[in-house]
Length: 261
Ligand code: GLP
Image (cartoon, rainbow, N blue to C red; front, side, top):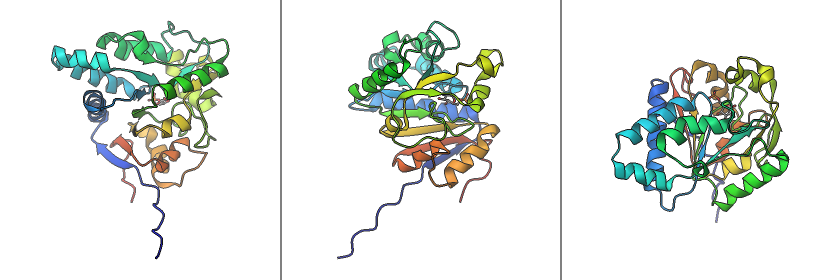
């Protein structure tokens, strides 16, 4: 008998919508559905960054338009783990990702701090904190729906290139390009962006049940094209997503001017 051919890595499902607002609405709908209908529900994996601002705004809008009962159910079921946090910033610092999550989701949705988990950027041992945070994700059952943004250099979370698919949660050095990309929150000065961060690794990300990569804006078009067409490589950490069987890429027209063949 001829053995069956090995299954090739499945290509990400690609959904293209007109603009960032349409993409945000679609991602918010996916998060809402996950919280409402997944049984058993695993924790959400969430990202920060400008791409996520309209996504979370759309989710809050949806929650505000829902019945009191639906909003109550969402509050009861919510547990999320963020991808990353800067080392050296307390959660009270408005530039921290903890503050971002409170502003965009915690306060408007009425969530408790313990429902929105992030690494502790002020831990005196960031490497130990990374191990603790990775273990907390595992203890909670791993991530169900993982939402990802995309760095200009192909990072997801803060998994900077080069980076293999098996690296776990850890403390990393941020690249110059990433510090430039994120400088806006630091008065436009890349040197004011912390040099290190704690990030979930590709290992925890690829262990999620489902992954949604959100890409909007023309600046991301070259890196998105590479990740959809090139074979997986450590030089483009997001390309490891091609190895996951349940990835959806949600992009707007600006980020995907031509659909790959
Ligand atoms: C940041 C974060 C990522 C984020 C990405 C894109 O550095 N660590 O989790 O998804 O870069 O950011 P933006 O949406 O602002 O382009």
